[in-house]
Length: 393
Length: 163
Image: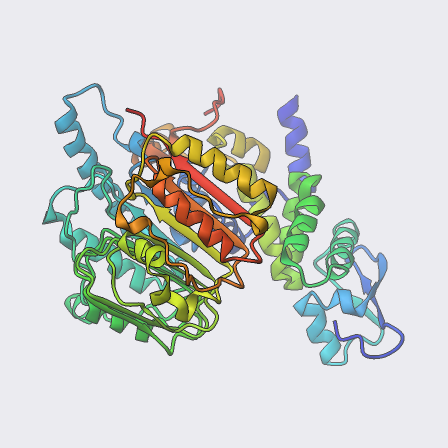
């Protein structure tokens, strides 16, 4: 009965399944890859439609572990199988894709151990270039900190190796967002990409061991957001981008990278450089006054220890009272300190600062003292967040 | 949206089942098809829209008026679109895709496509076939082969006895 009724309706009205193919592809392009590929089972007409999707191709071995469907096999061989399956899966899908363009290619491969996959990863980058992606993310970080040492290729060499040469120049001309995590990328290659990707709005390079002397300098008309983090061999960084609004730098202490950044208002700092910002504020006065939002990731500060909880509550209660009238009277208990607690009294004023965040792991002791003086230096502050992570051991 | 003259111009649109609708030109030109007609000076009398029926056109005009009344605020426009589409059944959505395509209204096209995509999220093959009027013309062997090829896409799909 129900079927007959549905058939009658089908005759009278247009069903979604009756829509022309280009409109169905339009719909498929707004789905996750998984949902889109599954439609190939619907009927013969649908079998190859997903291959023309122009949406987001996202591969993540953390969420798609089920692709392996493992038994409780030996864990080590299980990992090897998973790695192979992931690689085969990505290769299979990318090979089947027929559409001219893809908006976004995101590959997170956290199960990588060896370098022998280089040519596979090269081919993913080639795919991203060929399909003129707008968003490209390649994340090879491994949870236990293993760095696979994959080197981002020289794009021109990569293209010359390929038989198809129908890549539109400039390379990555449509790219809006580029995120590379645990991918070693030479300074020269970054320079090439920045010159080529004239539309880029968001750039993130994290944990690149090949990054040494990096320049992110105009013309970068569209660059709004930049992150350079955990590049352990970085010696110098120069940022001159007049439209840059938000920047994250976490890593070694280097001389101030911010040269011409008149619109930089949101800054996130971590690592030794963050310590320098706190303890040597005058080195940073050329740009600190323009900041509206400041996030300090103090993961490595070691301080007084036992007093941390007490300090947090003290700090919070002071602030809720009215930090403007706060006077810093340090109980002696706090002063079991290193020289770094000596906060300079000529702290540059952070006149624009409205939002301040502190993220830290316990043992915060002395760091909080400085935090209070940061607050004192910020007359316009109206939002303050403190996140404290307590280790579980 | 150029309303520099004092009295707003009104256009008359005619659906393929001969219903007539009045709509402010500033709202109607959200449709590139209509905008081109206006710019070419073909909008003097009645604008016939041969591929849109009255019921769908009424709905599209509601959308045109609603969205053009919202100032340039992408958040508010998005929430209007979500609300506008929330009570539409699948047949209406299919009609809207066709109308949006014919009228060349990319914002409506994108919104309806996204809505349909969202509806299909995690749904079983059987469910989609029934709701979208898709006839399974695979042989059982073929269907099994396609399923096997894309086995990974069946993880986490809502259960359905017709899967």
